[in-house]
Length: 148
Image 1 (cartoon, rainbow, N blue to C red):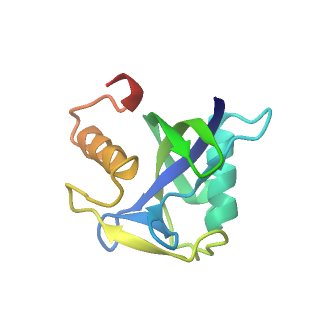
Image 2: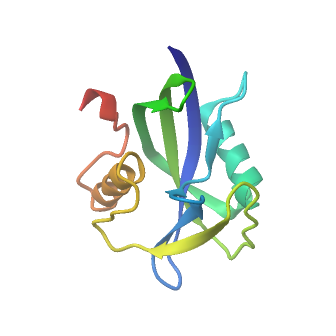
């Protein structure tokens, strides 16, 4: 079975209240993320995809050291089945930036109000881990749903 890896960011802001950036697809919410290019690190991929999909650049961010969410799952469509590895970093948006969605219908800042019920496979577990990490209950190092 083919393997693919995607990396991205969960972006949050603290003003006017703590909220997270979600990107709108026709039938679901997602994060800015995408496939790793050859020779690219996970973080380089996440930063590139963030900039391509939103216009947010690294200079606009405070990347949270020590937080990295990992998950593995199967992606299947009518013709193919792939093993997917997802790596998500966490970063605070430090200033107002015009968000320009290029691969999504739009975006929304969603108020931080756990527990969340946005997207069961990846976003909800990510947000639960972020909440634990912010509360100091978790090291935030690695969460691998394939091994839990």
